[in-house]
Image (cartoon, rainbow, N blue to C red; front, side, top):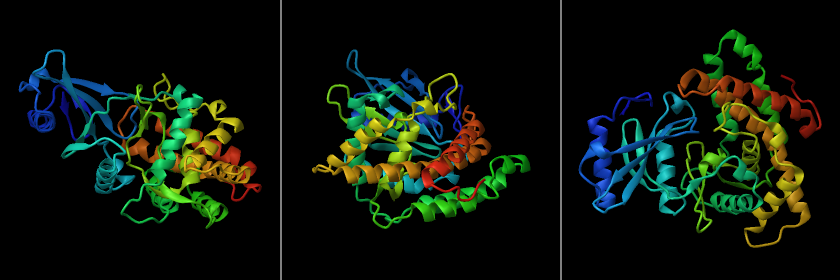
Length: 349
């Protein structure tokens, strides 16, 4: 399978990439067989930014193999993040024991350590025990002290993506997605949601089930894939996680969002209380309620974030996913919830 620059797999792996994977495997594991024809390649489904493959290589030991993960960068997605920044984040988090190791790089992707844990499913996010583990892990993730700027990135990101979306869209799409008035919405949200007492942390910003892994024996949670990570209000990151509970990216219609599955008040309260208490103290009901209120309001910013992402992805990404319908659902949900959550209509798209 040859991995092309556009992230698709055609035919067979290039000899150059085979040699690189062989070299990486040999330097880290030492017991892999020399024959690159023995590579087993398994595409992993559910990724919407990159193409991801599990590479298995037999070893000199009977019934034993080594695995690595090959990530082929999606075409055109550099508009969303700086790839070098993302690699630095990956390496920093890895050094601090929070994710897989970076084993090697090539022009259009990288080779990562294969984590021997299972990727969570959509249903796992609703399991109270697993949800509690995620809440505690997310608090730990937010406390990572990254060496880069600790300024909130959310609003600048939205303002950066908006003109990109407008430049790509047809006049019809621009009108449908209200792109000419969306900047007013962003300004309004920043004004409404800003509070200098809100906690800022290093946020994942894409905490869907496919980016969470769990060791079945130890029950340890690992958060992976940091393309969109940056400093933001922690309420925004929790809001994103709640919004992701309505998605199932492994269904026959992976773009369809079922908002009847949005976590109810009891689920949200439980998650937030465990999140706060994992810092080693018992939060008051007032603290829980305040964070819950902030989280719900930040779902609005999250809808705009992923609406713009969907619009842009429709034009730059070739992965088989109905990005425009995904964006449409996000915008619709924003419009449905705005007045309820903010108490006033604000600017109406």
